[in-house]
Image 1 (cartoon, one colour):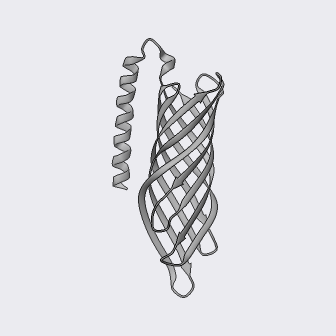
Image 2: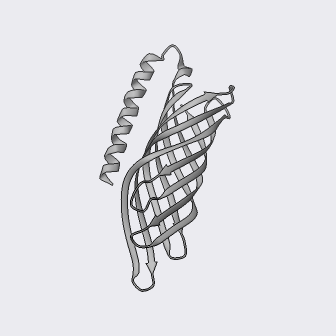
Image 3: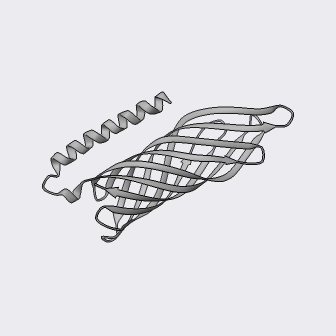
Amino acid sequence: MMKRFSIATTLLALCGMTTTMAQAETTSDPDSYKIYTGLGYGQYSFQWEDRENDTSFDEDASMLKAYVGTKINPYWSFELAYENFDEASDIDSSAEIDGVSLSTLLSAPINEYFSLYAKGGWLEWDAELYTDIPAIGRITSELEGGDWLYGAGAAFHVSDNVNLRLEYVRYELENNIEPDMDVASVSVEYQF
């Protein structure tokens, strides 16, 4: 948890420095740079296989995220997010994950109201996994790690300050349980 807090603090400081530099460089063109924040809701599919304990898991659940970003220009931005994945459960197994991610987005504006983007980044995560085995009882595993994420999305510009985003992201959490998470989400975003 401390590791994730220190990473988040460092990333926020970097966003703050980027903000200061961008404001100094774009005083003559306010549309070339914006800070934004957003809230999102999504559904995720979580799959893993624990070879050591001979168990597997495949379930869907919901997730919430909150993010803040900085738009360097109309084509490139950085984003820091907190992502909370609700508990997903199977017959005798359950999993709960949350994490902090840093991503970059490359956008392709189609027109003034619509743009497509590709997203890539890094997720620092914590997971709690529970398995109930009749002869043994409950086995609890706590894992943490950091892994890549990638995805794509579409942004709809509702007004000068409000965007609606649809997004699909794959998280490849490489650990001894080899989990994968696919997330489809919708977000409302406010640009300052």
